[in-house]
Length: 232
Ligand SMILES: Nc1ncnc2c1ncn2[C@@H]1O[C@H](COP(=O)(O)OP(=O)(O)OP(=O)(O)O)[C@@H](O)[C@H]1O
Image (cartoon, rainbow, N blue to C red; front, side):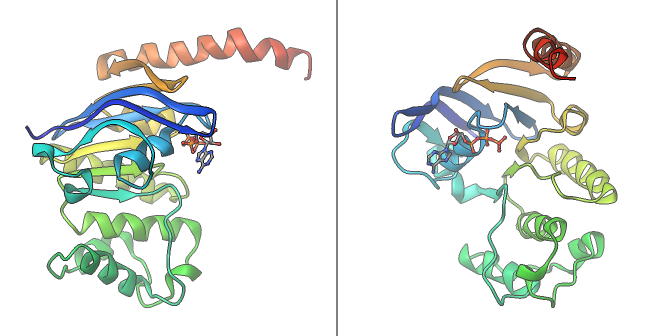
């Protein structure tokens, strides 16, 4: 099977049960959006999925039962860069760490336009995000996990990234995407899961994205706007 599966995933930090039985399936050629409030557990879920967390229970398996990492590229929420590595050296490091063949980054960098001979830890926040994206884009993964990839990118890069994701999807890449920007998600995703209380509360298909926005607004009106009336 070529799907990537999460079954009954549970993770707790001390007594705080962050994930309480998450089920999620990623498929080739599908962009799956993941939304949830700050602290809902999206990054925790991604870290478990990618093997960056210990102590979780449940099943996480990549295509054919292989480890998820074997076929998946990750762009974390805050990419880490070693000091005194240039952008180019960071890219080479990423490829070599996986034992993959040498890659030509020039084509992708004509699109993203990074100063690859500058130290990566001196890049701006948006340039760092672009560098982390460039590293996974150039490696040809079957799946991509992107934690807030639009965050920090300039307007042009945001538009470009949406187009890149659609093109990757159309040639079969499976993508898990988190974002707090509803428009970016509804313009790119084929389905969206909403994480609440440590579980997937509801899954929306593209045809239901209008209902997702209405549900979010409804919750806002019921819970927060009344409180706000007392303040401003
Ligand atoms: N290493 C850790 N130790 C203790 N608690 C943690 C740890 N990592 C995350 N948490 C807690 O787990 C919860 C989920 O955090 P997580 O970063 O997964 O949320 P998120 O949905 O990605 O939030 P955001 O939208 O703000 O990025 C939070 O309450 C957070 O404080």
